[in-house]
Amino acid sequence: MTFKAKISKKQFPEPYWHRLLRHFERKGYIHNGLTIPFLIGSRSIIYPGEPLITIEELLSEAAEYGAILQKCAEIGEFVMGAMNSDTRQAQCNHHDMGCIYLADGSLDHVTNAEDKIKLIQKIYYRYVVYGQFSKNNGLWTSFSAEDEARIKEAFL
Image 1 (cartoon, helix red, strand yellow):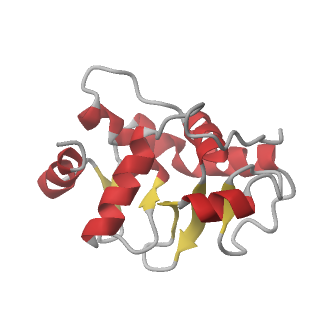
Image 2 (spheres, rainbow, N blue to C red):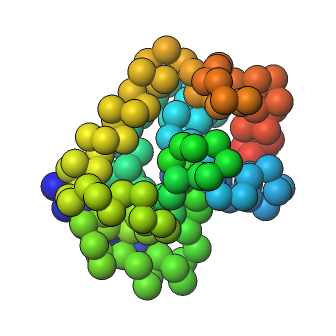
Image 3 (cartoon, rainbow, N blue to C red):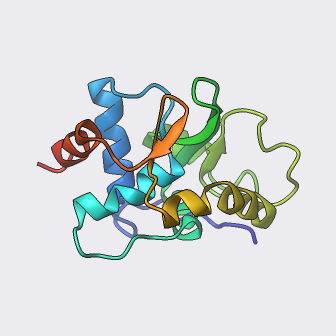
């Protein structure tokens, strides 16, 4: 599967997870991004009662809207960061992940987008299913009170 980018914001309004990333970056809460489970799980706080999106749906939206994906050395997990419009224009469709800019070589060993998605699903599916959206002190847990407050803060 190769992603094709839709760059126009009019066609594709800013997704909730991108707004959350921009807020966390502006506030200095994060440096590289948020984990895939964190982004997916935050939807339960932003849109209570609505179903969560899947890992594949998140990556598909990111491939259309734009995001930076890398392995965070601090926590040892893949994180997604916000992409500004200049970066989005320069990076979209230059590889099999559409507008997802792979900022490091952590996925270089995986040859195509479909296998990259499968790898990320294999790593994070269980955490999403069990509601373990946040990694703190090396352990996956549900959101802390601080996590929840910061997520809500982004949508006030």
